[in-house]
Length: 453
Image 1 (tube, rainbow, N blue to C red):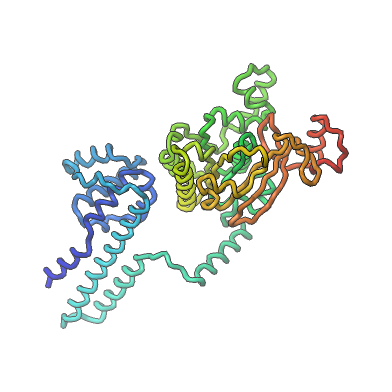
Image 2: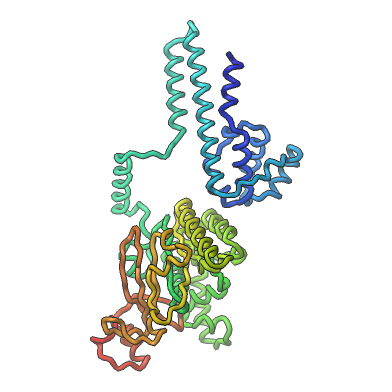
């Protein structure tokens, strides 16, 4: 009977799938980060695979990225030459995850099979007592419960929702991240797990909107990572500090400042130098390295939001192929936001349109279908750039921008005109005094009723 049991347990193993999972994880650190929570030592029945998995877990504990060369050296130093099976063909996250789920299912079946076999032994043992059956039943319940399917009842989720509501009243539950801009904060801010797209044509202030929010959030204690494909870390810092130092970023970067300006910079630097904003210029060479860096930022600095400026630069392709690449990246970023429980803001460049400068949501569909992947789509529009002096309600466009939440899966739709300071590169909510001073400095002679309050 023992031989029969062992042969059937052996049939509940899939050595090829074990090796494919490890090969997939070694092919891309992103795949390892996403799939490793599904893995455990008892999933691997193959000796070489089990040893390989142990080394990978050791690398993880040491904070090492999962890459083949270092892994191979470690394996060879302890266990000898690594089998060629580890250089596998599976490189996609989805296929590796499917194989991992299969291994989990097989592992649970092996445990249940062994317990059922033990039950047959107990049933034919005249000396077995009722306590033996009770222990067996408890083991069966524990094993079945460990095979978590992710199922939840409506009753369970009602209780979780009620706990969240009570937590927000008590101030203990996680809420939306405030941005310092009314159009977002009146809709409870930006939210973990969401992919947010800032879209607009060139020179509309998309990057300025992102750096404004990063600065505002940092001052409120929210850590962020900022990846600009066009600017370096020093340039971004100059932009973020311009508002508080009252010095333009170009002056800080390239001009010779006087003693008073330098003293003003030093004073603000002393208060702002510890803001939780992080950069990684070396990660911007590929989409894979960028997502790996975001994972590392979450581990090292507990960031809650990541800004990517901008998406199209990462896509190496042309025509339909490039649109598909951008769409795939947007969907991957959405999955990453959910997995890491952070908000990801990606900037999207829209093509020029001389006859109709105001952007629309439909135009985002031509940018790799990113509109379908995102939770929130914000359109940025500065009509003054196109020589348009007034909005449809006759208010002035000078020193302003129109922000439109054209898609709000979780927050709804909205549109507001905000103030824009081009010299110091930041957005802010408008007040009557601020708009009046801006209009007067521009030489406008309109009365207050015509100003865009």
